[in-house]
Length: 305
Image 1: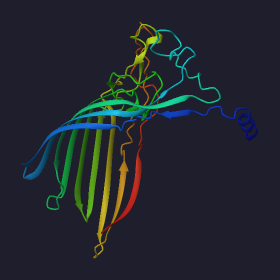
Image 2: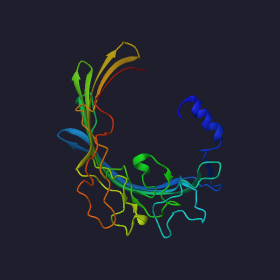
Image 3: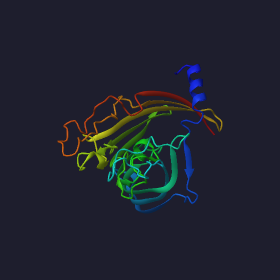
Image 4: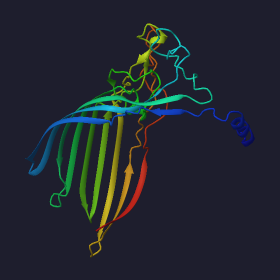
C-alpha cells in the first residue's frame, strides 16, 4: 500500500477521500483583550547600593478568540452517538460524502488571567561591577479552550461547540521564580547566570471518575505530584575587545541547563471509571519524555557599533 504504485492506485480509486471542508463564519469578530494593571516602583538604597523594587497586579480578559470545531453530525442530527450523552462517540466517521470531515471556524474562546509580579533588582554598573535581579510571578489562569496553553491547540472536537465554563488553563504554572546575576571578573570579561524555577503546570485530563457514566465524562485538568515542575540554570561568559574604533567585537559562550536537569513531561492522567477508586499512579510520572532544553553549549560572535 505504501509503495508509489500502491499510493497511486489509492488516489485513483478515491480522488476526493480525506479532503477536509473548512468553513469560516462570515461574521467573525476580531479577537481582543482587556487588561487592567496597577503597579508601584520604588528606588531604595540597600547596603550602599541603589536597588529598584516593583510590585504589579494585572487582570487580563481575552474575548472572541477563534477556534475550529467538528461540523460532522449523525443522520438524526446528534453530535454524540448515545442519546443524553455529553461526552464520547463524536461523529468523526460521519464525514461529507466524497470528502473528509467538516471543520467550522468560529469565535468563542475566552480566557482570564490574574497575576502578581514582585521583583527587586540591582542594576549593573561599572563602578560596582555586579548586578542581580529576582522576580516572582503568581498566575491564576482560566480558559475554555481546554488544552490550548499546553499543546498550542485551537481545535475543539470533544464538544459540538466550545463550552462556556472556564477551567484551569493547562500549561501555565501558578508560581515562577527567576533569579539572575552578572559580574565583572576583569579583563573585560563578564560572568552571568540565570536560575528559573516553576511549580507544576496543570495538565490536560479527562475525568470519568466523578461522572455518572462513561457517556458523561468531562474535561478536568490536574497538577502532577511534586513541588517543582521546571528548573533550569544557565551560565555565560562574555569577552569584549576594544578595537580603537566605534566598532566593538565580542565573543560569548553559553552553557544552557548547565546541570542537565530533567524536566519531565509524562504523567498518569487516568482517574479511573465512574465510581472506581482513583489509582495510586494518578498524577505520577509514567514516562521519560522531557521538556527542552537538555544541556547545551553555544558559542557566538558579535559586533557592536
